[in-house]
Length: 164
Image 1 (cartoon, rainbow, N blue to C red):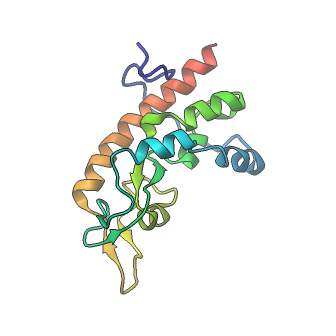
Image 2 (spheres, one colour; image 1 turned 180 degrees about the vertical axis):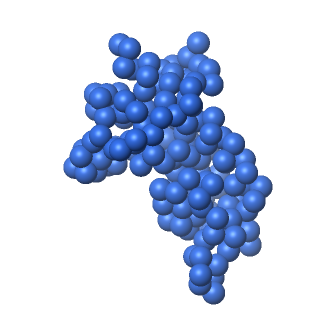
Image 3 (cartoon, rainbow, N blue to C red; image 1 turned 90 degrees about the horizontal axis):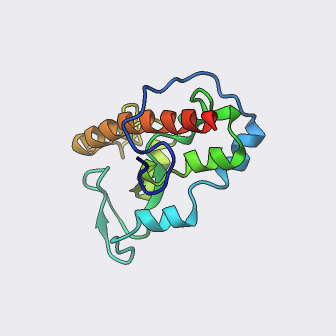
């Protein structure tokens, strides 16, 4: 069974298999420019009022005004290192990278701080500076759980494409 018409999202998948990235830096940058899509950016901002001051869900005590940024829950860097990703067509790679389940909305500050780290690795904003903030433990815990589920879903999506 497929979820939202996205290949490989119908069940919990299989454990992710990570290795060396099998795409070139140029290929990675070309894909980077095409993810997230405008549709995904809009999706993560649904119900968010960018005109009012909003409490940052990830960074306790911090507020922001503006749109949320679409952040890959399982980072693009990690997806590109999954077994089989490098053997997919560009269209298939983009379908995996733009799987709508793998996005969450983050403030610009939080997204810039997180970069390509996993939610397990991302513990502090501006670590080692006077402005340091510990990332919300509740927020991180939920995202770590979701990240582990999505790693399995994305690996299955890649494996399913390889069977075609």
